[in-house]
Length: 252
Ligand code: PAF
Image (tube, rainbow, N blue to C red; front, side, top):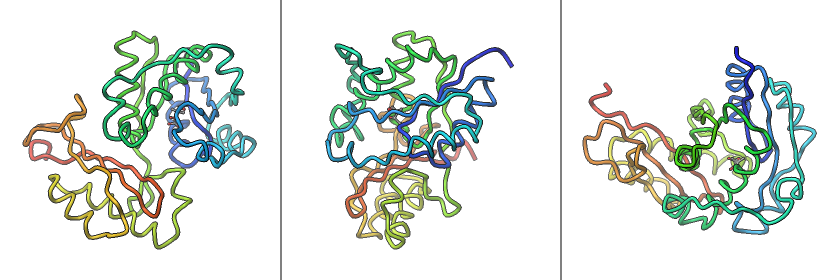
């Protein structure tokens, strides 16, 4: 194993999805740095920043147990000491998640630009759960020749298929049951079927349900070899997102 550094940026509230990122990072590098920083620039709503769960001691213990060699929880002033160099996510920051959360992806790139400068990682790991984030980060790195390799890690799911998310703890047991409709819908082969499945769960309000080409993040042409279903919506005020590869005939 070369003397490399793998980086797992987080906002804390570590769950099994983060643990998988750290475990994978440790397979890549002897040094694994985990950052914990609740980045205000990626929240549209001030109340969400305030209510974001914070447990630095607990998260540090979990990260170290999973294989992190260093946990870094910088303050706002450390990350943004003076004028903030804002990074734009461009048009991909304005569709799907970006339409529901204006400025969110600009905030993500702005903080990553700072964190990467401090950590100077060889690898940075991101979960496929936030698929649009992963796409935007990869594209920014590529276009700006940021010297880091972005490593995508498959979504970790509960046994019943629910994608792990720090928001799941806000779901009551009956709501959690309703949330499973997203996973069921993602197993369909086209958008109409996906929407029909989602309609069976009236408590889930769909924001978008699309099948995209993962290379362009635009609508996949029927029969395209590579397709990904992406779904977002609200369940009693809790925003949930998920995505999965759509199995096409060629792959079978
Ligand atoms: O995915 C997240 O937790 C955040 O968007 C990230 C990448 C840590 C940037 O704040």
